Length: 425
Image 1 (cartoon, helix red, strand yellow):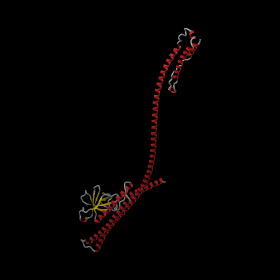
Image 2: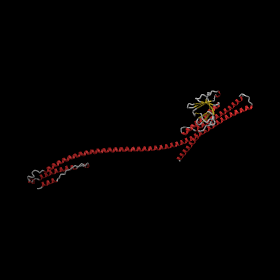
Image 3: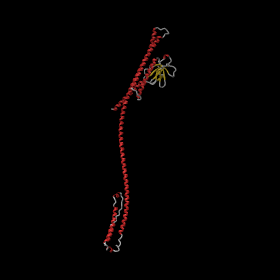
């Protein structure tokens, strides 16, 4: 539903924009009031000219151009006077033309491009009407420019501003119309008075005077009626132009409102996405904190294990050194026992004195002497067995360290055989 609404809003916006463009394009090509078929007469004086020249002027309020011709019915345009909304248009207090009858009839157009135009109307009222018309044209140009800026998105025109411009232009046009009517009445009175007070060079009858008076009045009335129609047409066209400009500004305001609503919706969507992104960022930050805590605990555990392994390694090295020392000590004891065992064995293998020489002495010995020899033999044998037992008693730690200690088992049967042989009769 939201997408359908947005698409419909875009379609309405495009339709309004095309309508405004058509209105502006159709209006900008017209010549308001003072059309090419009915130009107005003015005296024109440019800075490069030495004298005042009569020109027939055509005004286009939509562009601020005043085209002029040398003759009224001439098809080609002689030149163009351009002004804009920032130009200075005012009645000159100085009579630039120089003739007394044109006092108060001169007006001045100054442009920002420093190009000045000096114009002169037939009467002061006509000059005021021209100035009022040009001021209304400036209002049209200003409203048109603001409407175009609004369409392009670079302006800030409001409906109230356009309405103010329309009201001001209508007021100015109404004042110009009143001034033109007053000028028409004054011109009629002046023409009638001039005809009545004019002294004829030759005697005229009443009918000729009446015909001449009616002819002059008819010409004056036709000229003034033409001026009134032209001014009324100008006023109507200016009012229509301002109305169209107001409609264009209203459509532009509608477009701006639609753009503003779309911008608000987009901003709300962006804020929602931003809030979701912030929530995800908070979750990720929590996960990062937990991961850092796990890493820290793992590092502490690893350090403790490394420390424990180092301690075990040092203890094992120390124990190994102690075992090596014990092994050396046992080896020395074993060597000493072997030496003592060899000495005992050597002593036992030697014959007793007097045994081989005289057997009878042995036979006739006292039992006590035989017991002494047996006792000596048993003591030495007991001592040897005790030493061998000391060598055999090696703890299980020595077996785990794979330290093999060779134990020499000496046969004791020899002693027994020797005893048996010595005991034999």
